[in-house]
Length: 446
Figure 1 (cartoon, rainbow, N blue to C red):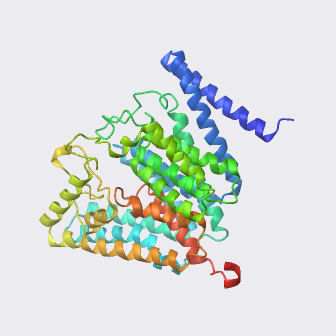
Figure 2: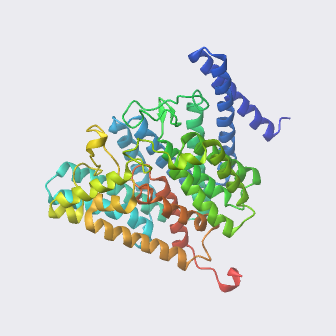
Figure 3: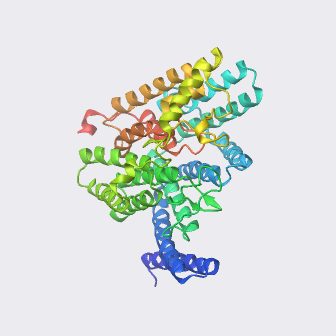
């Protein structure tokens, strides 16, 4: 009789052979086929790891995590076809309508909910005041959707550990799919990139395949989130914890993501304080990333000397400030209304690139004005207060994760959610677990 391990090995080999065969047909190169076979084996191994964790997961967590991860993938795969992402939002929104009951009042005092929803309500009001109904409608739809996400998370009944584990495992499964789809170029250069200004010049970073793409930073984010949640979980088997971290290390090496590295680095430093023995695995993984990429990748000027180490972020932040000074009073108070997502135009980047702010507090100012900054600070304060007040009840992964999440707000908007807001979703679920669980007694704490 074939054991479970035997079936797993057979599955991994089958996936590897399939990837190699496809690449041989497409590229007619034995070297490329061999590298694709290796990539397929890696993708198969990550797939087996994902499947092994599924029995310990809640279905709602798997679905929500999958929906958010796929939102990001579809956003980059179909950059110029917004209807694809909107269709996913509509279909998942219908499901959320069934999952958002019963209403839990604790959702109203959730710091993560304030971070991810309040600015959407504010900027919708701003668009109404400046008479831009189309933008106001889109923003209200966004606010309604992410409001339903909050309600659905707080309506979860049962084991929140299974729920948050399901979110992380869905992220891991998405990484496996991207590795398999991009097996033909995972270990070769140049990598496949989207045929947009965002992709050109970044052929040294792994995105996936032409028909299934994700931004390298977003891919690194979900890989790091899965590693943090699973590696800090004492109920997971040792090989599952090590496997999740190894997957994150591989993605960090191939995606060249500094923000993803910063997220995992910060979490690892906290993990060393929390449990130095188990922290050895992510610490070793980070060392491997530095060895493979070279420490210089942390200070690489990706857009040339003019953009600097920040990859143009500082110039974008300056542009946000300049635009804010020119905005009307309503926009100063309630957010810029250039488009539904309040993207930034910077002359040096070209007219065809809609820039994101890549800084959570400055993004709050751009999207929802002064009121948005106040709402952001309120949400951040509530989140920190809840975790600090219930720190003895907080699961280890949340204690490790929160500082990393806070650090990323300097170079990304992950903290305030939005389409593909995977980090925000996991943070929301962790906070909900604290707010809805009864405090431990002093005897239990000992």
